[in-house]
Image (cartoon, rainbow, N blue to C red; front, side, top):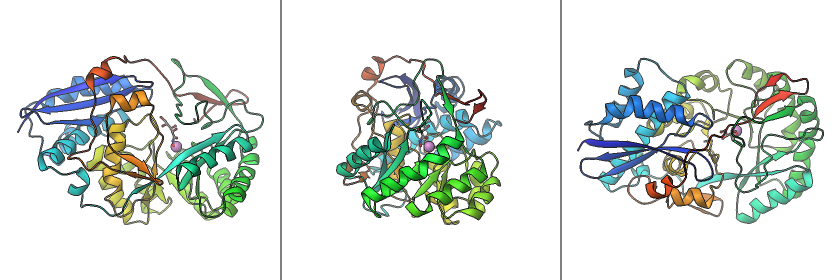
Amino acid sequence: MKIADARVIVTCPGRNFVTLKIVTDEGVTGVGDATLNGRELAVASYLRDHVVPLLIGRDPARIEDTWQYLYQGAYWRRGPVTMSAIAAVDTALWDIKGKVAGLPVYQMLGGRSREGVTVYGHANGETVDQVLTEVARFVDLGYRAVRVQCGVPGLAKTYGVSGDKMFYEPADAALPSEATWSTERYLAHVPAVFARVRDEFGPHLRLLHDVHHRLTPIEAARLGRSLEPYALTWMEDPVPADLQEGFRLIRQHTTTPVAVGEVFNTVWDASQLIREQLIDYIRTTVVHAGGITHLRRIFDFAALHHVRSGSHGATDLSPVCMAAALQLDIAIPNFGLQEYMRHTDQTDQVFPHDYHFEGGYLHPSEAPGLGVDIDEEAAARYPYSPAYLPVNRLEDGTVHPW
Ligand code: EZ4
Ligand code: CO
């Protein structure tokens, strides 16, 4: 069997997605997500101009060899554009291998390690009362874990507080919008939010919070310590993780678990954090961290260091990525949690899939391969539309992490 064709499909059914579809000479097809929020066309070009020509004629069964060929062969390593492109190829080849074998991909990864994939939803509101209403909605839907984000008094707009409560979309403008941030106001407010949520929902609901890289290590240490009475499952991205030894300071001061990694692309981005056991959950994903092959490598390395998975699963990761993530989540020994933000009906129509939510779990498809596809006719009805993530500034105008 040989790869006969590979198509890069850019579509915007409510938001932009980039998808690679590989076709073999025997007519078997596979799909991979290549979406990089706000930088979509860079990955589309990397694939179209520099990867697709190298795929034609290759044996689709040689997944590891193709991964190494694209990673080592390019000479220029790592980075979100390169690794999203490699991820798309890798994911599509696993899809093909599963279809050829007649097995869902998780069976080729060692089979089931659990009955379902525990997911968390996003509850958010401008006020604490609104937050409580939203958490209750997720509990009623059957969720066992909920991420909680709340508006901060004195700030017009806060990360994670969305207009549409079910279909959160942070890439909200054709050119980046701007928000204003105050660490002081934030740190003064968050513990009170979690005090109310814990009080209302009791000790068993798993609660998470995303700091979105906004603090310094000592500020994160203070936040973690102030949240200890509310027993969070994790505090996410407390500081930008470029300087990894900074996490030692957080660890010295708090037992609130730490989750990091949604912007990481390879195991090398996380190696110090994992080796030194400075984090508890690694949030790398199929699409941004080199596909199923490389994500499995990261999770295996993490498993040796008491670190569990907690893959990113926001709406900018397509149903193709989610279908692939679930195949891995159900199989690995050190699964932690999977983020799950529902896609809109438009998106679900473009990407037919049969993973499904039940009782707080997502269940991967049992179909051969990944159990997801792209409807290319439907996709063609939604042309690319520029959309960017916001930019964040302090009250005095200084640019600050978003
Ligand atoms: O900001 O997916 O945990 N989830 C997040 C997301 C990210 C977006 C970036 O594209 O932090 O909302
Ligand atoms: Co996050």
